[in-house]
Image 1: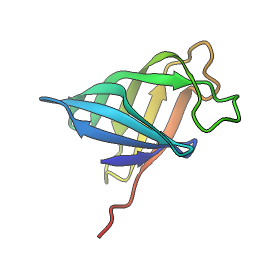
Image 2: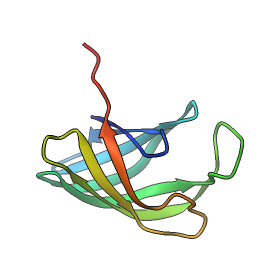
Image 3: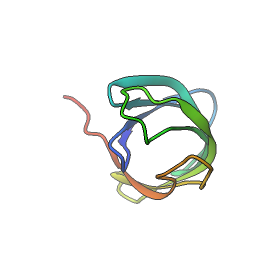
Image 4: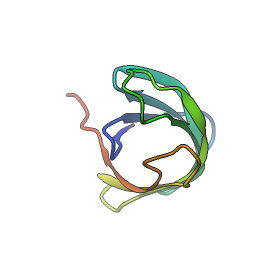
Length: 105
């Protein structure tokens, strides 16, 4: 499913094997496939995600690194607590709250 990050980007999770999910990011009109991967189940996931230069006024920022990430989906499945490990070049790493994107009917 899709989640809206604290910074406004949309993160889409696609099954990539047993208890594995590929993460794709849509931010500022710039889609990025295979942006990261997490493994886990029962609302608890760990993995890595690419980091991008957030201090650029361009639509598609350049990748500046990779950070470890932990995702815990809250009961009710509408929000998730996301921890992106602090890393050089990452201005918005740390704890975030993501909201599940509304599905189209």
